[in-house]
Image 1 (tube, rainbow, N blue to C red):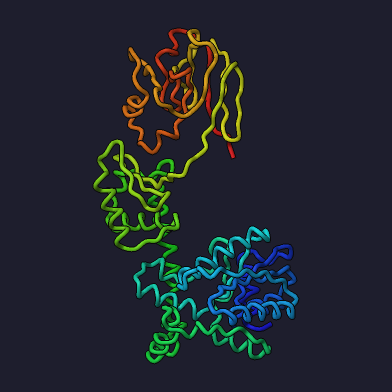
Image 2 (tube, rainbow, N blue to C red):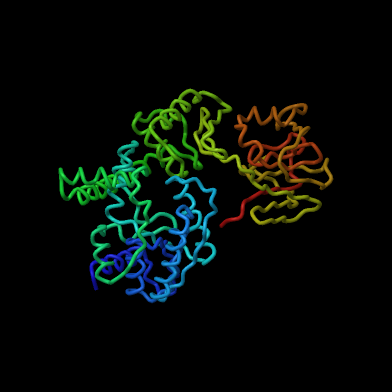
Length: 445
């Protein structure tokens, strides 16, 4: 077993992928790297392998010939291949090509019911990626280079050099595709490969190994940082929301790192300017009781108030609706509402907990709804005389605007009798004994 095969076999074991029933999908351009990966995978495993080839359709007949070569190679190796061809309107840019490829791979993952896609990034690719990131600006996370595993993508050749890969192909009489665009230095990564790396090798012939060593060190140190940040977040977080004042008591460096982590965990593009702008936004709005939002993407916002900082989505969420016509238990996919007769003395009322209340329904027939707010809704807050608009009631409770449409209410017509988790109407308060107990819970699991 050669070094490449040993490396792949160890990788499969590390990520628990060495199971015979798993389907391996391999991103296959037909170039040296993916050719080497596909060939060695076939030699060391008996798993079903499907090669995935995307014809970018940029170079006309050359692209079509490469696709045909990929099919012939897979036929010789006894490997299934699935190909798609892009339309001619995709922009001829590195970013557009990458986005199209990864969209293709994700669709193939669903099509073939496999969450394992191997890509053939190697040690040289990792070094070139670090140089590129240094040129455009990066932090300690960016210095980690290409991740061996992210989401459904696995990269088992990251410790193998391009020379080792090309030697393997020559020794095994493999004939990879030679993409003519790889020599076009108008593309940034080609420029780094053709122009920058040879100059760096004049300073240090082993610069590829040195840069990869930096990548490993950065990964180790970033893991330490993330462990420390996780401990800090536990102390300043409540219900997945960061407590604003505790956040502001941290050092500036920690504040910036936490914002950086918010970008990373939400898969958002970031740079130093964006992080500083969000930090400025938080500080400027940290005294607002009702809070304020700042757009991060079309559907993602950061919210800041005097109490909390959180990432919120503007995507519509389907909330439950119940029509209550009698005592009993009402269940849907996510929630349970219970209305039961109850006329025993209780120590605590109107509520035993935010989601449970003891009430007097003697003045109301059982014909209720559980729903979100509507125009014209009113409530008589517990302990007060007279009704008020629900909007005013929610403002008095200091409910942020982005949360109001997610609240649920037990209503009789336009009258709110119970703002779930907030409070009951004075009209159903208990004077001596309750008539009913109500409870609203989310299903576990």
